[in-house]
View 1 (spheres, helix red, strand yellow):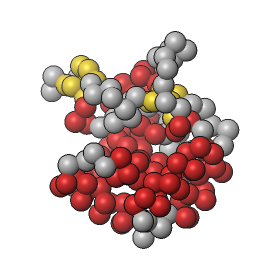
View 2 (cartoon, rainbow, N blue to C red):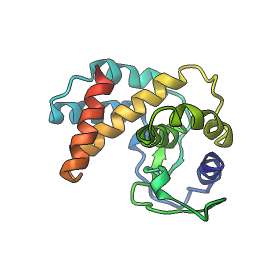
View 3 (cartoon, rainbow, N blue to C red):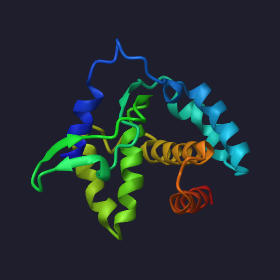
Length: 170
């Protein structure tokens, strides 16, 4: 159901909205990510070098920006709502799925592996899409870098994100 909610959200009209489109422009995104990496003193060259080729020519869609189970309302049986819209932006269609997967990966062994295929199906994303896992990984790394570079995460959360970023870059 979360995938279906995401597919519906991506389809909302955006013409009259003034949204950040950094994540919809691979060249600008790569440049911003290079600044984040420098600020954080992390070596992410392999990911940064791949960004323009991974995302060139892909569509930009409305993204929630923090699409994670914690921001989904449910009555226990169905999804009833979505909240926390402070990070809404235009981005690659895989931006929200990448962050959803990152969030769900904290749930314990096997949860993401079990939930990922039906989530993709609900979101109308082809699991056989070429370079899917590479794009998801790059988006997760860049999003972690963005969050850490902003410097507004509480210390315990910042430590977790830093550890995850380090693991993703090794």
